[in-house]
Image 1 (spheres, rainbow, N blue to C red):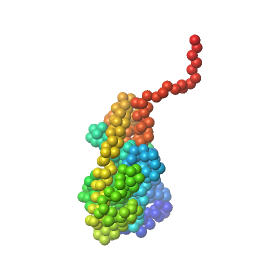
Image 2 (cartoon, rainbow, N blue to C red):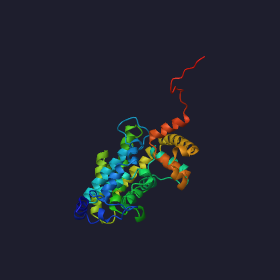
Image 3 (cartoon, one colour):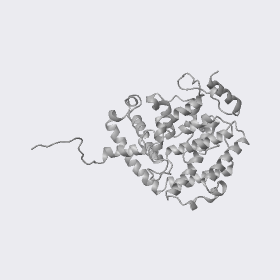
Image 4 (cartoon, rainbow, N blue to C red):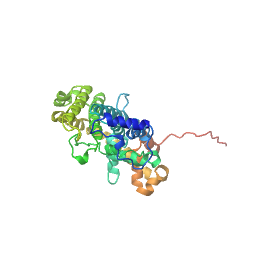
Length: 353
């Protein structure tokens, strides 16, 4: 028996009856030999962590563009916080932690530079629109590994595709077509909202954009007055409510806690995500990414992937390139294209009279 088979046997023995098991996965887009050591979901987690798209997250905006302080979240630190929260919930519910973590680590791989402002810009530029969760799926299925994709299991891809809630979607209690087929995928969806609502409050207060006294009092009384208290209360509520109901079906939250969380998110959209500062940042992002969109299409052979152009068209190739940019690469590229530079000597030149 291989080490992988021994670990798979432990999953069958130790995980809850409603947990996903590596040995029962629906499989990958392309068949491949099993790893002798790692079960399928563990292998997926490793592939995501070692991907180029994952490394780029460290230089992509979470909320505030190019923050000068070292303590502001980036898209990478957000992803790690989501993973930690999701793994905690999965452990208590005796779910598959490898699957949960793989989904959490891969859920934002398709995010644009400049956070949601960049996503809004690409949604306007790209015919047919743009969604970061669809781009995350495209990255793991197509773009990574020089257009071979990561060949992840169906369960991980399903969780990535259904993690997003948008402005109005709920983290739990949604219709079956909108929620992940596995409880592990549902955990990642909930953990994403728990993480961003709380750490975006922290960053907004640190940036001076938000007065903590303005936070909705009802939500604070229900969830807590610190980020740590709120995360603890939310995690505890998800776990206790799920175990008390039908955990084999879907995750649960109490009405009062869910309402408090949704009110916090609604407040953040009004006070942070869509305030005057955010509108100004959107205009800047629009100028940069719009300029890059036009410029890249003038010389597609120099910058864009020829295979994508030939098969899927110039729009998709341009979208892939821009969505994959980090904030600083987008700014540097814009400066190279549009900002005049001082003349410099690339080598000594002598002029003789």
